[in-house]
Every structure is written in C-alpha cells, then in structure tokens.
Length: 601
Image (cartoon, rainbow, N blue to C red; front, top):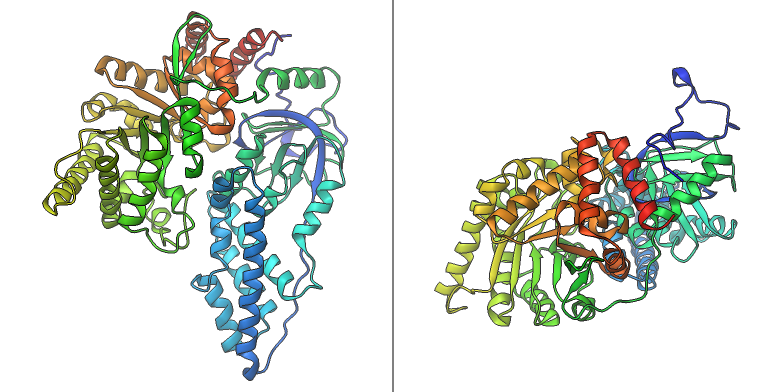
C-alpha cells in the first residue's frame, strides 16, 4: 500500500464554515505538539468547577483563615507529590509539576495575593483563591505559555476542593470520565494540567487532543513518557461524539474525524508503519549499535533522572546529554556551587568510566521556575548562553566552577555544552567565562591545574548556527545538534508544522550540512532532542551521516533495533530523494513509503 502526499488531506468546507457535524473524513488542523500517529475512539473529557460565591469573614478570624489556606496548600502538594511517586519517570513528572507546586509556596506572588485578600478584604480563603488565581491565569496570554494558565486554574480548583470538601473534585471528575470509555482511546479535552496528564498513565491512552495548549510546556514533559501523539490548539466541541473514532497525526498537527472505509484502512496501516513497539532492554557493552551492513552507530543516553545514571551507563556507556536546568527546576533558590558539585560529581562517578555531556542551564519559554525567579528569560526574549552571559552571569560562573571541580575530582571526560549558540562570538564569550572560572579556582588553590578532560561545544539549534557552523567549529571540540529548536528555527517559527516534521527537506539539509562540516573539521557530532528518540527517524539520521545518537531511556531498545534494520546506501538515498523533492508534503510521503518497505508493511 502506497502512502501518497495527500492521503490524509481533506480540506474544510469552502468559505471556512464548519461542515455538518456528521461528515466523515473531516480534517481539523491544529498544532502538532508531540509526534506520532494513531487511530482510536474519542474520550471526551470536560472538567468544569463550580463558581465560588463571595463570602466575607470577620477581621479577628483572618489568622485562622490563613492557617486553613496553609493546610489546604500542604494537602494539595502532598497529593501532587503522591502522583509523582507513582510515575514511571519520577524526575520528568517532577519537572512537569514544578510550576504547579510553586503556586503552593507562601513565597509565591499568587499565594501572597490570596493572603492579602484575606487580611485586607476579609474574603474567605475559597473566594480569595478563586479571584487571585483567575486574575493570574487571565494575565498569561502568550501562545507559548498558554498551558500555564490552566496549571494555575487546576491548582485553584484543587485548593478550593481542599478548603471545602463539598466542592467539586476536578481530578476525581477527570478520572471518572477517563474510565468511562474502556480500552484504547484518544483523550479530547479543552484543557489538561500536568496533574491530569499524570492520570493518563496506564489507561490505554493512544493520543491526546487539547484546545488550550501552548507549543511548549509542562504538559508535554509528562505526556512524553506516555509516548503518544498530541495535537493542540484544536477544539472539537460539537464536532465529535464520545466514542466516535478519530485519527491524530502529531507530526502534521491534523485531527481526522470519523475516518471512513479506505481512509480508515490506510490510517491503520500508517500507524503500524510509524509506530515501533518498545522492545526489551538491550545492553551495548561498547555503546555501539550496528547497521545491517556493519556500520557502527554510537548510542548515548539522555539522562533526565540522575538516580538512573549507573543503570543507563551500564546499558550503553556514554551519557550524551544532561539538561542541568531540569535538576534545579524545583529549587527555591539558585543552587550553590557545592550543591551543584555534589550533583555533577555523583553523575560522573555513576557513569564511570564513560564520558558525560553537561549542558549549562537553558531557561526560556518552556522551562521557567517560580522558585529561581528566572521569568526574565521570557521577558528579555533571550535564552541559552546569551541569557547566562547577559543576565545570569553570576549563576553561570557558579555552575562552570562546579563543573570544572567535578571534572578535576573524577578525571572523567566532561563535555560542556553551551545552549542556543547563535554565532562564534557566543562560543568565544562562553569559553572566556570557562577560562575565568578555571583561573579563579587555580588562584584559590581549589584545583592545581586546568583539567585536561574538559571538552567544550555548542548546541547547534538555530539556522544562524548552521550558517556559521565552520567558524563555530574552530572554537569547539565537538558539536551537539538540538533537533527540537533547530526544526522550529529552520521552518521559520511555524510551530504548527515543527513538532514532528523532522523529515522536512529544509531540516534534513541543515542537519546534514552541520554534520559534513564537523567531519571536515574532524569534530564529533551528537544528535540530541526528539529526532533520535523516534524509530521512524533512524533512517533519516543515518542518511544525513549521523553516527552518534542521544536517546531517551525508554526508547533505547527500539532505536537500537531499528539501527540494525538499516543499510547506509539505502538511507542516504532516502535523504537525497527527500532533499531533492524540496517539498514538505512530498517528503512526508517519501518517508512513510520508505518505512513501509523497511518494516515489510
């Protein structure tokens, strides 16, 4: 069965009017938030909390009301932490709930506003919570952070429930609606908080469609571990009934309602082609997977949970990426040099004798902690290494000192990655800061000399860095390619297309160009982000010349298996054909048909 470029393209009615709700094969276009493809019945979930009416208290009871608020906040925090403890990847679940938990801290501006309403306006805690959190949610109007508004609403609802047991429990309401449709399902909802996303685990959820979803956010951190396609910015209200079949294409951002006949058959076939089931654990003593024609591909682990460093290093050897900001998202203050040294030392020792790549902190629109007061990364419009150099110079210096000390103590290879490098000036400035940290540590007698086991390189994740890759390489020992942001940058910020369109000719051209430049310079290349974590992209990566993949823990076995089914000439021919096509839709069809042949579909 062939998959043409327009197999799943069924336009809306002319003039933009919504067609009759009983129409089959109706496609609604939204934003692809998480790659993948699936077909299943729709499980429609709606959680609406009742409005709290104004209720006043006497001035002398304000203290007791604040105490009642504190107890409710502690109860909600305990409930959320309980959800985290039952998650298969507690570290990523904790990261997903970081901002939600921060609302419950007395130092939170929203929490303080609630207290002010109680003491100044003599409002009940329930009403004060409702008004403060609603006002905060209404102030979040960026499309990048839209999902955070619902995080605030979710915490508001849970606080009100904890304050008044008779109030509607929205989490319990969500659980009941989810359980009402047994078997495989696609969750369709207006909103989804990280707490609700955690409820989707082990519930046979094959996909998610969300209306109020930012392009990046904490939902995605939790949903990633479910491993299902997600489409956002789509409302199916009034268009689909509970239990009716829909198709979710997270790569393209399409939702197809009531697929009929031929389309349904093709959708089922396409799902089999694109989705490789996870395999049992595979151990690579030398960290090398082997293609069908005998070419070695290095497989490194993407470390999100420091507690698993020993396990993952024993499985594949090198740790190809540690996103250091995720280690500190739940902190109430910037971690000290000693605290970071303790964490980095433990990671290096756990990975011994293999190398580790530590990326310096990269705060921005998708990674913001209330506790660390790093919203200035969003406000300033800069992130990555430029944010560290321009706004968080002191904190950057502290982190570099901790990394240098950990390298000196363990004598293991440490690759320091500077995120979001735009040009060679960024690399030079970052290296100057590293040299300054080394010099200070030597001058203070903390280390005797510069550790020779430190390597430095950029995270190449913008089209600017690709254009300037040759001078950047002259200042680097290696490069890491961040496929998520590079894809968005390459497609000119079209986030609706950028979630899973790694097959796009422009993206493959940028990745191949960077790899070829690194080969000419004799520098290693590590491929990071979502692209190497999906088996369907393995032939594309091999075809562009990638020979080191950084893969998430849960995808290691499947990716290693897929490498073993690929042959270099065939993969190179696939990439050549896609780039020569110059067309995203045609590239998609070429890619899918190739996978069908590779998988024997």
